[in-house]
Amino acid sequence: MGIRARRHYRITWRDAIRGHDAAMRDGGLQGILSADAIASALARPYHGYHRSIHQKAVALVHGVV
Image 1 (cartoon, rainbow, N blue to C red):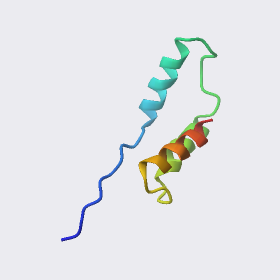
Image 2: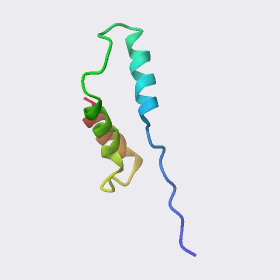
Image 3: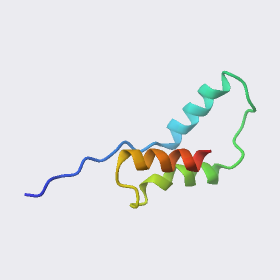
Image 4: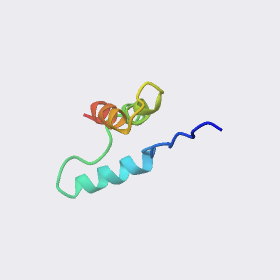
C-alpha cells in the first residue's frame, strides 16, 4: 500500500468573506471590488503546482495582496 498524502485545508469563499467582515471592524470600505479576483486568488494555491502548505500560503497571500 502506498502512503496516503494528507490534504491541506482549502480556504473557501465563506472563509474569505468572514475575514473581510473581521477586517471591516477596524475600518475600510464596505463591499467587494471583484468577486472574480477573489475566486482566482482562492483557487491559485490548489492548481497542483504548490505542494507544501508553505507554498500554498505564499501563493494565497500573493494572490490576495
